[in-house]
Amino acid sequence: MVHVGTGYDVHAFAEGRKLILGGVEIPYSRGLDGHSDADVLMHAICDAILGALGEVDIGHFFPNTDPRWKGAPSKVFLEEASRQALQRNGRIINVDATLIVQEPKIYPHIPQMKAHIADALGLTVSRVGIKATTNELMGFIGRCEGIAAMAVASVDLPD
Ligand code: MG
Image (cartoon, rainbow, N blue to C red; front, side):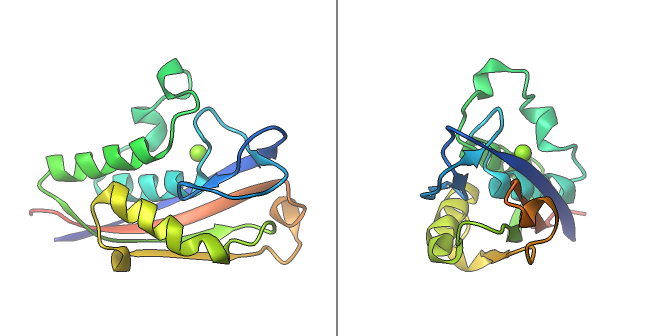
């Protein structure tokens, strides 16, 4: 039986942080604020997978009050979501995500992001969709105050 889940995340820009999206360090004047590496893309995908499993969100598994996850690469969160699927004899079919970001340009980095995400989830790259769009200069994203991401995941689970 195919189950689907959705995920959404947003992080604000902060000075003195690296910008990590889909496990790729992207050259930019600021990074995203957060307890972990603040990889908004991986967080949204993680929640989509957990949603397909009928699970609670990523924050439940990795509380931002836990010093173990301070500065953690978000790949570990994706690996945990994958492990949760396997534990239920589930198989992630595909994930698809959209980054909503005014700056910087994302497009050149998408192949590398896909490779990282596919690797963390044990999927072939063709099962990972990543797109990016601007917010047409509107709202907090348009003012370059932060980046949002949304994602869907489908997981084949036993009945
Ligand atoms: Mg997050």
